[in-house]
Length: 179
Image (cartoon, rainbow, N blue to C red; front, side, top):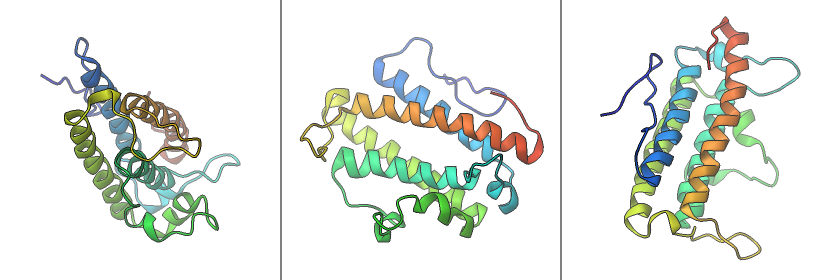
């Protein structure tokens, strides 16, 4: 039975196997980003704070890109997915952050949620075909490749770090605070 907190986030299991625990923490972090972006219009998703150009909309698009890069491109060695497949990444290395300003809130939320849904399916596929020790099929330039376990830990860290940014951005938009 999954316990859901007051913000609609599934609590990670207290006593489960390694894969279920890692996936539980990743889903908790994903749900935290969804909570921080919930109910905001274009102005809210585009708001900035301090000297940073970071926005909640940019975070949603960035995390959609990160989900796709790690769980599709790296883990399964698939080609980049739309809309990331048409970007000149050398000319615009921060494209996802800046282009989010031209997207509607629905487009940003759908892009991110679809990426999360595809990632869940790709992780399930990898777990069934090699488990947490499975190495990513797209090796790094030095020939090494991270395991699925490493990728899951990295994604938890990526979300946790950016959720700290999301806390500050959301508070600047409407004063909402919390974890």
